[in-house]
Length: 235
Image (cartoon, rainbow, N blue to C red; front, side, top):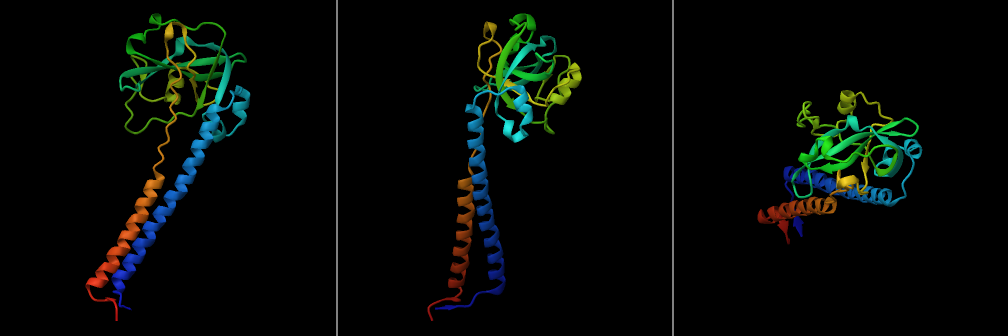
């Protein structure tokens, strides 16, 4: 067997192969991270609710997606609306309302979704007085570069911009988080809670196989090229 490789082609092939294999290994590492994340969030979602004091003692990662129970009352006069779409793609609004605990701390609660015609408060049955709620602790994503500016006249936002909402309503939060209310029914059926979405796409294995496949294909082309030039073959 003789093999007389072209130096330039060989160096370029080695570099590209190392890069492709490295990308495949990186995707395998991402796969492990994603599987651990999914397992952690699943555990948080199925765990028993904790108190606000317990939640505040945990790290941001440890409390994310944990269920929290709160006792207090809603400050219904300071609610805001976040425009989004439901599972069918229809426009809806999430009602974000400050919740004041029995000891005076305030948290923002995403009470769930309503159709647009129920935005005026008089068209809904308000929850007044002391109540107890359970919801999922979430650190909301910040508004992106392309997020539309809020419609101040209609009190409509296009992201859960806690900084903007609290400034507009003179609210001081105990933590910069949103408590996503569970599916416990509200008077009159609205807002409709239980809208927490847990969706972590996990395509890292297929990505890894793609990178490894490209590395193998590159090597195949490399050797085929040398065979076609008579630089690889039997003596």
